[in-house]
Image (cartoon, rainbow, N blue to C red; front, top):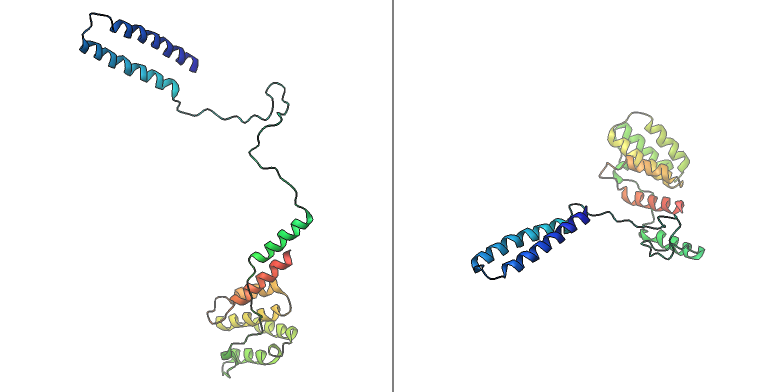
Length: 213
């Protein structure tokens, strides 16, 4: 199709050449000669545009093998860099760097009791919570404290008291190195603005990250 268009242009070029040669011969006025030149020049430009411009670009073929034989063509420039395997020493260095990228200066966590939860109350559920906190939780008897909080939560309580119980049971699990279970408990207590769970959750995530490596 393109060759046909080129031949047409060549034909028009020859015709125009003969035409311009005819124009410069004697007997043509300047006005008439200029009018004819402008008209035919426009037609010539349009013909050239049809050949040189395409509505859709031709596809790019990145040939890696011979079309006839199918054999791989060697010494071709590659768009992708050559891949090299890391040595064991390099792997250790990279792993150490990755382990320390997001590591923050985390606080040393100690058991936390909200002061208002130790205040004597006539409310039954608040009183039960206070007894657990003042006994096994305060004495860091984590196994017994976990059983007490689990029994406490097995009974229906107000949303506020349940949230506090989850917060304290999360700490009990944390100090038993049960980080995944502790994380879940802290998320249950995360809706309370008076309970600061962020330092605990950040520390747990850091521990879990280290355990994965």
